[in-house]
Image 1 (cartoon, rainbow, N blue to C red):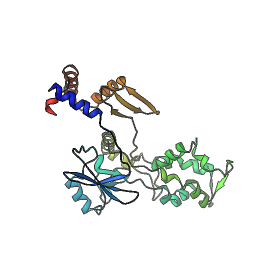
Image 2 (image 1 turned 135 degrees about the vertical axis):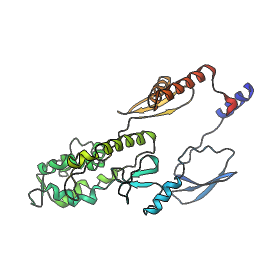
Image 3 (image 1 turned 60 degrees about the vertical axis):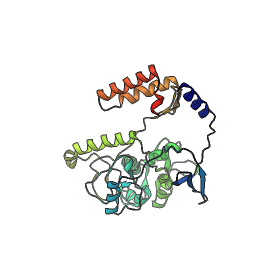
Image 4 (image 1 turned 180 degrees about the vertical axis):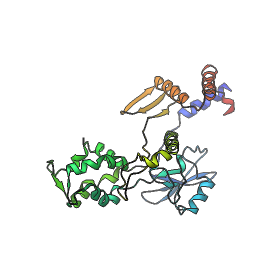
Length: 304
């Protein structure tokens, strides 16, 4: 057994890694993998001896059936609004990797936003009128905050400046459209990770528990299409970082603040975070005991 493990470890070290980007797997047979190159549309095949599938899985039948009933059969996952309510349904919510948030574009509501901000109906917006609604805009359209960060703009009012960087006292509807025309390019889909699903679950539970209270005391942003305010603020994902095991009791971590760490200490940090996220003390104890047993006696390679 020791000789076999030594042989396997030596063989794995000699493996040459080759990455194929921009390719989509369309078929896996017992002898080859068929891929389609997205940029050229060409279909190629490569032989294989072993396939390890580490991407997502197909949509569950119950989700597929729902998608067909509500007119989303041509999609891969359910489309929800920013409050995680399934589009085409009234009281159906979806979270996790079976759904994706269809973020509303700010340019679709640009005329309504301009009208809501133009309190005196003058046909132009002053900086003060824009600032009166900017907090609601930032909550309703999170891509605006990402756009400001990427453009290194300190304040939203910096959008209302002329090409020379000078402040503009008033802006009409066309100038307002021009200032926000590139914002929607920053709308991104959330990753299909447990971190996202956990935050979505906590968000929905809070909304359900406060539903009756928020009917009379809405907590959400102003409705730019329609009247009043939304009952709740839309879901906002907060990225808490990510870990990647490297083997040999080492790991890599990317944490908020663009902080990156690699090494054994990062592996122990991953252990502590992973254990803390377990649902009960029972699972925490079982997990830590399994790690301890593996650390002392090693992995049972006979079960691989």
